[in-house]
Length: 85
Image 1 (cartoon, rainbow, N blue to C red):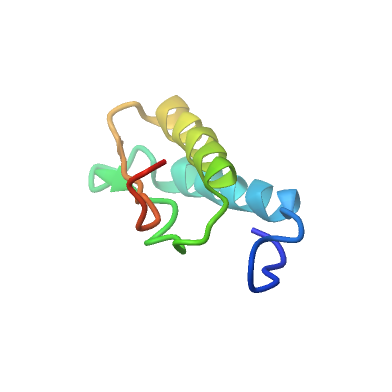
Image 2 (cartoon, rainbow, N blue to C red; image 1 turned 90 degrees about the vertical axis):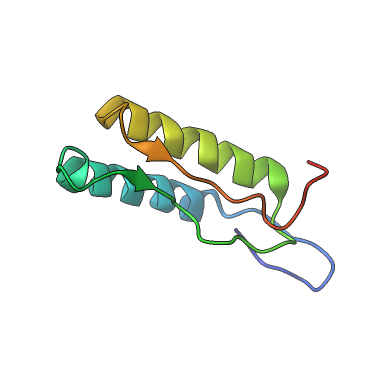
C-alpha cells in the first residue's frame, strides 16, 4: 500500500493500487470467460494493519472489473482479520 513506519502508513502508493487493479483486468481478459473460472480473490489474507479505506476501494474497483468481464464469476474478499470495519 505504501511505506509502513511501524505505527501507520506514511503515504498510500496509488500506483501500486492501480497496478493491482490492472492485474485483475489482465486476468479477467485472459481467463474471465474460461469454463473453469469460478471465482477470483484479488488479495489473499491482507494484512491486519491495511488501510481499510484503501483496501475497500481496491476491492470495489477490482469487483467492477470482474463484473464487467463476467458477472457470473464470484468475487471473493477477505476482511484483513478485522470485523469492526
